[in-house]
Each structure stands twice: as C-alpha cells, then as structure tokens.
Amino acid sequence: MPKTSPIQVVKYLPATNCKECGEETCMAFAVKLLDHQVKIEDCKPLIKDKKYAKKLKSLKDLVTPPIRSVTIGSGDSTIEIGGEEVMYRHELTYYKKTPIFLDVADDDDEAEITRKAKFIKDFTIYRLGQNFYLQGIALRGRSNNPNTFANAVKTCMKAADLPMILCSLNPDVLKAGLEAAKGKNPLIYTATKDNWEEVGKLALTYNCGVVVFSEDLNELKSIAKSLAMGGVEKIALDPGTCAGEGIVADTYNKHMMLKKAAIHKGDKDIGWPTIGVTATVWIGKKKDISEGERIALAYEEGKLATLLISNACNLLIQHTEDIWFQLAMLVIKDNIYADPRINPAVDAKLYEIGSPGPKDPVFMTSNYTMTYYTVESDLKDMKINAWLLIVDTEGISVESSVAGGQMNAGKVAEAIKEVGLADKVEHKIIIIPGLAARISGELESLANWKVLVGPRDSSGIPDLMKKYWDLDKLMAQWKEMQE
Ligand code: SF4
Image (cartoon, rainbow, N blue to C red; front, side, top):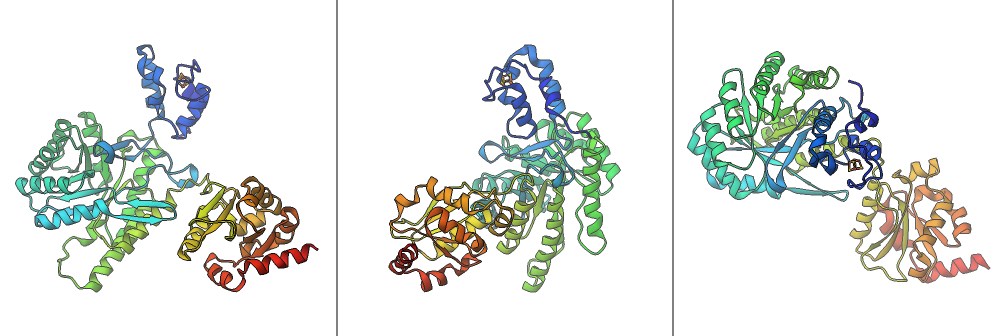
C-alpha cells in the first residue's frame, strides 16, 4: 500500500490556514495528522461546518489505518487497540503498545475474583522514569452459567474500573455479562462459525466490539466480513494461539498473514486488530500443580507472548501474574514500541539529586534516557546531595556520543556556562564519565574547571567518592596546577 502524503491530506482540509488547530498552516496540520500528533477532530472548522461534510468523510477514509482501531472500556480507562500502519517497526513506528489483560475465571469464589481484579488494577512497575501497568480483565465464563457470569462481572467492576473482555462461546452467558456491564463498552469474545449471528446481534444491541475466532483464516475472514456487513463496527481477530513444537510457528505465521493481507494487500475485510490468548498454555492444568511445573508453564507463556508482542499483536490475554514474567513483558513492549526515528532522551539541563548545596559534587553525563536514569538511580541509592549536568548528546549514550562528536569538550563547557554552575557551587570540579576520559584535558582548558574522570560505569561512583572526593585537597591541586 503506498503511503499517504501530506499533499493528499491537505486536499480534504478547509485550506483556510485559520490556525484554530494551533498550527500555522493546514499543511503543517496535515504533516502532524499523518504522524499521529494531532487528530482530525482538532480541525474544528472541518468538524463543525456542514459544507465540509464530504471532505471530512473523504479525509477519514484516507487516514484510516489499514488495521482499524477498536476502543474497549469507558471513561478514563478507555483503551484503543489496533491503528497500526506498517508490518515492521523500522518502516515507520508502532503506535499502540500491546495492552495486556489477565484472565479471571467466573466460577472462582468472590474473594478470589476480587483479589485478581485488584491485583490487575494495582499492578505497577517503575522502570527508567516510566510507570507500567496492566490494562484490563478478561473474564472467562468457565461456569457457562449466565447468573454466575453476571455476578462475576459485577464483582470485577466493584474491585476495578478497568476495560473488560467478556469471554464465552455461549450467547446467553455473554448477554448476561453485557447487561451487568452496561455502559462499560466491553469487548465480547468470541464469535465462531457456530454462534456468530447471535453474537453479532449482541454486539449491535449493546454497541460493543466483538472478537472473531477461527484457526482457519478463510473462515475467520468470512465471519468478520459477515459481521461488518451486518453493521458491527468494532471487530478483532483471534486466529488461535498455540504453544508447542511446530505449532508456535503456525501461530506466528497466522498473525503475520493477517497483517500482511491488511497492510500490504489493503484487504479491508481483514483490517482489524489481532488478539493473542497466551493463557491457552494453562488450559487443562490443575490448580495444585508443583512450583516447578508452574514456572515451566509461565516460561512457556512468556516465550509465546514475547513472540506475539514482537509482531505487534494488538492485545494479549495472559494468565501468569508473577512479577518477573510481567517485567519481561513490559520491557519488551517498551523496546518494540520505541519510535525508531527518535533516540530516547531526557531534557538537557542541570538536575538536583537530593538538596545539593555549594560544596556538593557535580556529575556530568549524556541525555540518553537509559544513561540518565541509571546514573540518577545510582546517585540516589548513595543518598548523597549532588548536581547532575545532562548534556545534549541527541539521545546518544556516552561512549557513542564521544566517538560521534555529539559529546565534546566545547559542548560540555558551554553547558556549564548555560546552567550557571559557577553560581551554584563554590568549587570548580566536575566529575565526567570514565567513557568520556578523552575530552578531559580539552574540557579543563576550555571551561577552566578541574575535571575528575569517574568510573566507566556509574555503579563505581561510591568507590570514586570514597577514594577521591576530598574537596579541599582537590581544590588545592587545581590551584597548584593553575599557578
Ligand atoms: S484548523 Fe483546520 S483549516 Fe484551520 S489551519 Fe488548522 S487544519 Fe487548516
């Protein structure tokens, strides 16, 4: 599919350059629209003025991604899945991190359902300046009983205001769940060749999205097409998720084939988000399995989930709760969904660690996110007060930026001046990373500051401070050198 250009987009904008959207021109708006930085709704004249109705429709058709977006949930916890435009991240970027839903069984007792729903709601991991969360609850109608299912929906809703997927093959069970979750916009799982007409009617009645399941891709497409023709506007596809020798590849291939048909061939019948259910690894396993078996299953689920996230699967239903498992999921999501066009960077400025004063040490490093948070964390662990000067290296790490010239003596000397370091501290000593040792001499002469070369890794800072941080001695040495 050829990529849409800003010129094509501008044709459908009012072209008045009125600036109501906050952009200088309609062309600037078009560029940002294609880059997902603004929404069509931000062009108020296009939305409000009836004379633009035709243009609005054409613009929506033009910019709708080959894999359409589907929303789940309501209010602040609403999430959007799908909306991707490319097969592989390096072709542009992936936009919507794979949401992770954990399964909850409706026939567990109320206390267990509440515990798991609260666990999902409260789960958070802090890593490299970001908090990571789980996104929702997939309630399995294991009881196959409408009342039990409806009560479990209510219990989940009481414990956590999160998007939900209501899972059952039985339309009566789904209907009971939808009644209990009225107004919450859940996704229903699943429409198959045997029940799709009834499930489709439920999706229309309750205005919710529906997941189609079939391991046969032709059948999957046919059911999705029939539902769309019948008026269902929110669809997701599950081509089956299987673990085990030989079948993992099959799972992966099916997801890739669906994406390829939607993105490369422009097949609108298949242009819906995909769902992977890695919780299938646990099907048929008893609760009282040994710890060794439990970890082996979690590991198996982890491998499958990693594979699907790497292929930008648009939503995963998982079972494993362990923190080591979820940490791996979150790290891989963060890496796969990082925009390859932008180096992850923090603002280049002077940061305060604790409450630094005029006699406290000054450290310098690059503005690469991982470098910043690693150094910051090591300094905070030491419980010292310090200044941390972050130099703009275009989001490149210390070693590479020294080699590539983004970190050089002139730039660091300039940064020292810009942040007014001489007014913040009484001394003129700056500690630079060991990997930037080669700029130390030039930096001393350009900045007229004494440079102390630190360790290659910030975990060595405590040792450096113990051995060398004697302010009077260092200042005396510096004066001596200048005479
Ligand atoms: S609000 Fe619409 S018409 Fe006005 S400048 Fe922005 S894009 Fe153009």
